[in-house]
Length: 208
Figure 1 (cartoon, rainbow, N blue to C red):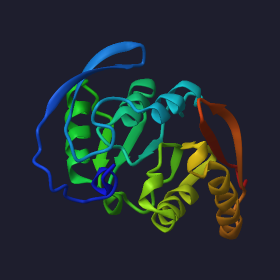
Figure 2 (figure 1 turned 90 degrees about the vertical axis):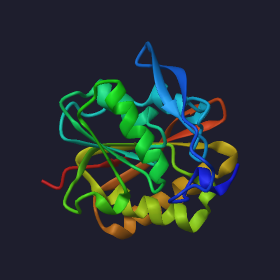
Figure 3 (figure 1 turned 120 degrees about the horizontal axis):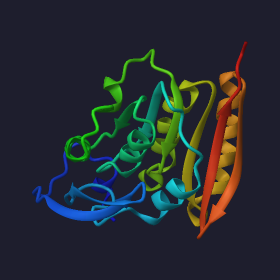
């Protein structure tokens, strides 16, 4: 897989849109994808595991999809929680364009698609879901999670899906250490394993 699938701001390849059929929230839906983004052929196995096992997101407030790609996680969050605002972030401008197009196709007006730096710094998230870009390299991945996980709201959860053989357990150890250094009331655990993927959960307890 080329690195541009994950973190190139502007993919070099020509953009050739194509429609694909996927199942989201139990219904077959037609979405648009293109090369130069993550998993343009459909919903990848890791994301399927996350969508199958993660508990329902918060019904209201702010929800976050880190590394949205063409949008399977963000679209699911928006479908499950129509009263919430879903922030779909990705460094890849092509992914953001496609995610926004897919939200419009599905009639979802509660998705905000943005580059990470465009999200207002004061926003805290009631739910975070992500299939994080493991292959960007350890430091980039750590910087990404260190940016977003501490922005969980009180009594909120983040759910990450990571392939077991790509370092899920060592990532959990690092997440625990990072959050401990933040000095807040966080816990992190590994509640599920499915088809070679780990589901990692980060929880933030109320400080009140």
